Length: 402
Length: 64
Ligand code: HEM
Ligand code: SF4
Image 1 (tube, rainbow over the protein chains, first blue to last red):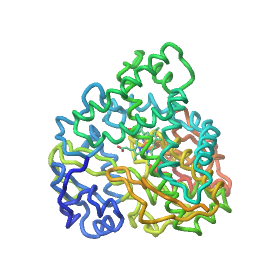
Image 2: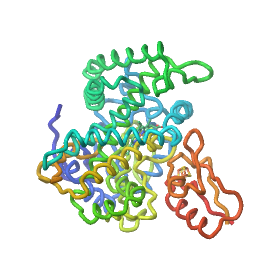
Image 3: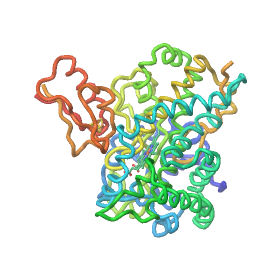
């Protein structure tokens, strides 16, 4: 669904992150904004602000007194309609504020801690190998649609303990969820019916046959000695899909896009595999895929501007990562950058709960791709397309491997 | 010199224990914990400083 919008002429006073110029290449826009104004404004979306600096993003991300996370996707809806209605439920902890946030977050953290995630490495590696086998043979590999896109949902399916035979069903479901984020509410609810049905069936199966997986973990989790309601379990599963899939897909895709265009970086990674963990952090800094949103809680002067209650904040972690005030040579990709305090996973209490998993998937996906194809280039730059919205990454990425 | 993590600031970003697994570990929530007590050796000090410079939450500190 595309709504006709007026093109932006001045991003300082009328920004729109869905404008074609922003989608194609947002970095010069952010650089210009940093030079001209501390915080950009728009009347679109009912009124919104965009701090383009690391300092501004940091201050707002850590300020839960003046900003709420009740919705984190900027849209045309009004705040009183914004809490997702039943059956979807709200998506704790990402849409929760203190004090409930901490309770909902602590509940899921153990399932995503390094202790729980690190043992998945062999499975992720086997999965990447299988996907590469499937596309092997031709000179061109569709590295986004046929590779990066399929990794996160397959890992999540395994973690949730859903049947392997359902992989394709599950990937369809995932797309319905992630694409419905921009739909009007009634269409979103309709889109969710088959998903709810599928998830409830899986939940029932796990209630009957508990096993060692994330679904059973959620079913056994307790708040104040009480098991979670099925709706809470369902809501958390939906959050994991929305938060964990397009994000990681985008990170893998952007990194492969970079390597396809920068042979010297590819060569270094191919010959110095130990560099990978440091390189991963630079990929995450330079191509941070996730921008979040907040709502202003009350009228106030903040960062030198006059904010009104229910104005949006577009919280640009990717823009913060390019701020020269926070990074030496911020606009250069430095594959062995030793000091890299990037904020791709956010800051403060909502720091990405899935960051250990995301890093594992990104690292293994790149390692396996490079092991298979130590040399590759972009097949056709004109065919590369980028997602529109708060998650940024290539959606079509034909790579020449032969 | 010693290395510390301010538990109130740490959000489990995990940079410290991936950069210097000899100095830092993690708890069951994935938050960072310091594994070494007392004075750091020279090599350890360098790693601790690197972790300090990479923690997005400014939770790692190298102190006297
Ligand atoms: C490269 C991939 C990823 C990036 C860049 C990313 C980024 C982010 C960011 C910036 C936030 C902060 C949200 C805010 O401040 O409002 C966040 C939160 C979250 N992410 Fe991720 N994410 C990624 C992958 C994942 C994965 C794989 C999962 C799980 C399967 C996940 C689960 C979550 C959850 C549950 C939250 C909410 C945490 C809370 O509110 O306490 N993410 N993510
Ligand atoms: S890098 Fe910082 S935030 Fe992350 S675990 Fe270590 S101390 Fe905590």
